[in-house]
Amino acid sequence: MNKNAGSESMDIIKADPSLLDELLAFARENFILTYGQLNTEENMKTYLKNAFSKEAFLQEFNHPNSTFYVVLMDHVIVGYYKMNIGEAQTESHYPESLEIERIYVSTKLKGSGIGRQMISHAKNQAKKAQLKYVWLGVWEKNPKAIGFYQKMGFEEIDTHIFQLGDDAQTDIIMKLIL
Image (cartoon, rainbow, N blue to C red; front, top):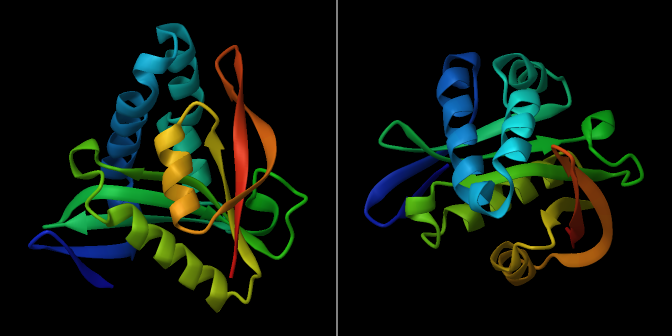
């Protein structure tokens, strides 16, 4: 898939093992940039150690019902999302669906259309799999992301807890019917 964000060529591709180290570095950096100032250093360290260790990331990367997609511009990762189907989903009571568990765009490129392209890509993957909807969880204290997902057609349907260190945070579950 080639799209333009500005004048540069953009490709969304399924991540393969050759991209694992670069993807992990991008994921860690952008998680810190997005949430580091809003959480304690200790909770961030605990979460990163558990969720973004190479071992944990590799386990997710190799799960048969999870797929990582990366957005490349000039062969550099500028965004990624992780999709889960079946038992890989973080909530088991959303059958016939695709979960977007993580979706991140380089902080320098937010607002450039990359997020919209990733959502569109995920919708296409769900349609190919003959699923009925896409869902995701978004932190209740992230109004920009909530607004973005609402503009993309997602509706709030529920909440769940996202554990960040010792902080039980509330995520809003949002659903997009295909």
